[in-house]
Image (cartoon, rainbow over all chains, first blue to last red; front, side, top):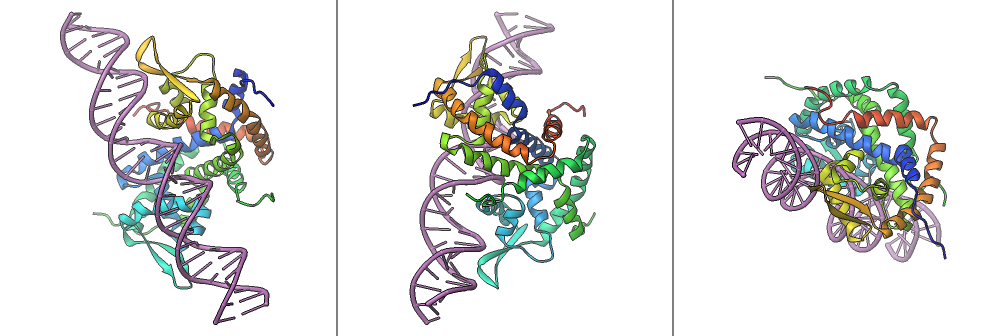
Length: 156
Length: 156
DNA sequence: TCCCTATAAGTTGATATCAACGTAATGCGG
DNA sequence: CCGCATTACGTTGATATCAACTTATAGGGA
């Protein structure tokens, strides 16, 4: 039988000031809002921009590989595709090589939206990079955090 | 009348490899899943941990100030409080000084959950920091990104 | 006192996020 | 060919996220 005493206020300050999960969530929310706002004229959100961009490739990928690329749950991606399919920016077809798989592809309309959005991204992204002391290092650290989530990478 | 040509595949690779919004979202998702998993025995998510911790202070804060601290929309915080209030981990009361404001406070049960969760956080957070080359610098850059969203901080 | 603006928060509707569970196809060993 | 574990994906339910709109109080100026 254990009892727990309440964390001290000092502990709270420590967590608040150091927690990488909190810091990353905060930055993610702030950045998302900023890109959402900038992309509003094009009618897509920051997440939709990332998704559309990840589909702009010579060979249409399947759903699972895109989810892995975005470090996103597979079922989240399914949900995110729905509004884009409704708007005919993305279309799916069965993989002729594997009936289980869905191949994802941009429509011409989707490519057009992406083409409109890209210069907006360039401009805002350049602005944000200027605010940072070392964007490359930041990207590198963030990539390490993403990779550390590879499900099953740690035996257990 | 303008026409837009489709972004090249090289552009896609550039965006994919450099976009800080995407990198931050990915890391945020991966970290959240990792903390969610670790905190599962306590019955809270990473976001709920951050929220409960931010309420562990001598004087109960109002809703707006907590939303600002978490860089979160005010209405998002309202929604996030609902499950915690249902479980009696958090309670609210009207501010006697200002009838518009709601003061947020941990219940004893909320403090107990936080006390159970804190050692889990300490352990996992230490593990994550070991994976990084410069956690302090990362926090610093992430803070800059959060601050850059201060609504209205930039004139124009 | 009476407006009038600013502030604090709630509500609604759309999308995002994931775990848990279920379905169907693949592909291997026999 | 058959059985079975694996793989790819969908559905459901709960929570998270925010914009747009609405309600109500606070506080200053006429």
